[in-house]
Length: 286
Image 1 (spheres, rainbow, N blue to C red):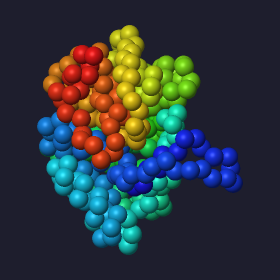
Image 2: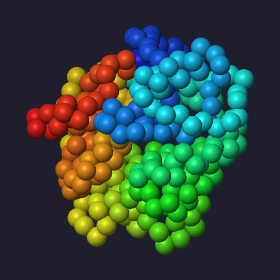
Image 3: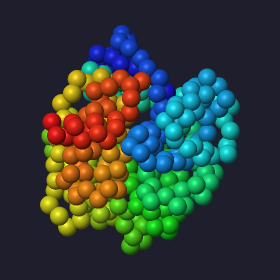
């Protein structure tokens, strides 16, 4: 994946100077696995396969460096999928991804590697269609804690039937940080679904709001840092939330810890070290 950093988006049919660029791994799932590994967990990534080309070899090298176990789909592509993210100085982000045929590839994933996982994180983006459904169902059947990330997409049509009276541990989505009430609206919409023990909405610089089932809403601020990137902040948040809940922290502490992890990552360049627990704790104390 290529991330392009610009001062502001250009008008249509015009151009803009690229201030800098970096290569990274697209999708929240691989990043969540990497951040969890850095926090001391044994993380397995179930996703589509990459090709034996420079981009694919770079992705595999990063996963090895992050100590992430990779269990890809058996479908071998002829070329690694293109992913380009454009970020401006205001923190806005737009992505361009080659996703044609991705649902068929993801449908071939072997679910056995996650059968004994205590926690399963699943991306439920609208563009993935039905592909996440068997993962969610298998994780619930195995008794795993499930975190669903809607990524700003509406809840998928298959979700209600798949849950069928069961609950996931966390449902997470994101809201526009420039809209002061968007996060609260999103939170109420998630609470109305009544499908999770904890509903969470991230909102960039505004931090995050959350609510445990039957409890008042919680808020946690994003900790101000010198902004170097925004790509991956939501994944850092998700991984830190999983880590904090896994050790038994109450929701207010978990939310603050996750916000600190996102802020810490935004203050680093993409090739910098992944956040560690002691660093996140130090930032929360700030």
